[in-house]
Length: 467
Ligand SMILES: Cc1cc2nc3c(=O)[nH]c(=O)nc-3n(C[C@H](O)[C@H](O)[C@H](O)COP(=O)(O)OP(=O)(O)OC[C@H]3O[C@@H](n4cnc5c(N)ncnc54)[C@H](O)[C@@H]3O)c2cc1C
Ligand SMILES: NC(=O)c1ccc[n+]([C@@H]2O[C@H](COP(=O)([O-])OP(=O)(O)OC[C@H]3O[C@@H](n4cnc5c(N)ncnc54)[C@H](O)[C@@H]3O)[C@@H](O)[C@H]2O)c1
Image (tube, rainbow, N blue to C red; front, side, top):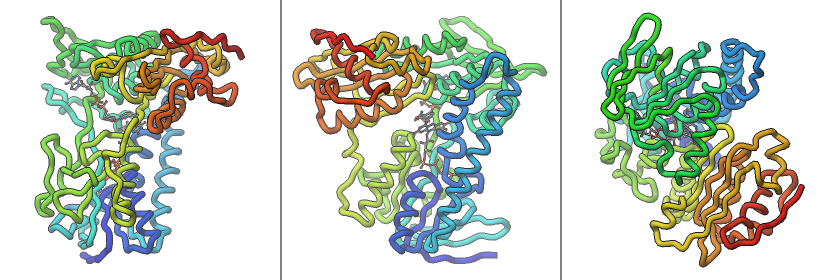
């Protein structure tokens, strides 16, 4: 059976940016069709297999008491996380289905022309034509080309792992980026023996050495093993285990695994979209080529979120949607160039949040730099760390010695994912370090660490601070 729908706007992919565009334009009375390939992915990666389940697993992994058997605790946690993601998925579906102007189609979309896609549905298909098209198909895990890996029965992606109720006794993670480190922290805490094999000479190599080392020390302290400069050459399945073979400094090593997680990055999903039929170009890096306003090589087609090759964060996809909406129904002024001081958080425990320049980057850029830095355990104005029994970590600020503005910050601290947003806002609005230092914050909170740490900069006065 086949049907044809003519829409004002077609959104391909039910991710953060796509659903935001669909909801807004649907609310304005536009006739919108939203296509999602899987009924298990309403709402996209973040609520189903990305941010939400992983952060919920962080939470559950930390609640395990020594007397809780790891395997049982893990299976229970996975079940609870699935209940949460199911709730979010249903909420996403209902939000779209309840809007009279939005038609949600479940099926895989592929272009057949610049204004037309075909959506496979059961045995038949729907043809959708639209004046404006938004592509929001996200990204998917890369499985590196390592002998034996693709065919290994113990290969898992992040999605496989969070759906499995079997806690791997020995988890080997190939790749020590955001995803690899978060999974190392989570599964280490659930009770797996975790080894991270990273190809680069350093993990968190973009960060200053003191910050990276502090973060890795926290994880090492919880039993995670890291191997850098590891060239993984082979993955060999046996009956009881898989051996992950790697070379380092000319020596061959092997580490046994019950699960091997590929965490070497995610590639934009363009496969099967037949972009050629639409005349949409891709970039050398494999994403859809877009300009600063997220227009593709076809002016009526936009690409937002991971698929356009930009930073892979949910809040970037959301911001992409603001740019597209500004062009479709606003003043047409927003662009990617407007983005400054975009923070990021690696959700290990405690979380590691960063924004702006590192000390190394600031010095290399020619800034006269002042550093304000303190171990969390020493921040007297922040009793919250002691209250919640998480005193590990440090806070480091890179300040411009001439303007007193904040050039960057790295926070390895309880609540870092919240504090960093205040710092990012201050950076965007040129609030000085002194102003942040002398502001009034609630107590006991983590933000009030700013009262203390920013008074600690080289040459600055040391404030006594007290609870
Ligand atoms: C394990 C993990 C943890 C993460 N944690 C965080 C975090 O803590 N914070 C953060 O900001 N980011 C995090 N991210 C990254 C974040 O999830 C992504 O950057 C974000 O979800 C991308 O959203 P998007 O709008 O680009 O598309 P997505 O949310 O990926 O949505 C794309 C949708 O398009 C659908 N689709 C694909 N092809 C087709 C087709 N041909 N037809 C129809 N539908 C199609 C897909 O099924 C999918 O539902 C994490 C990612 C992972 C994998
Ligand atoms: N908290 C968050 O915001 C969050 C959490 C998880 C994922 N994400 C997003 O998901 C995306 C994917 O994360 P990721 O960690 O998979 O990718 P990544 O690009 O951040 O890190 C990949 C790591 O794998 C290493 N690597 C590459 N090939 C290798 C090989 N053959 N052997 C060993 N190591 C190898 C790289 O050097 C790098 O350190 C990221 O872009 C991130 O933005 C975000």
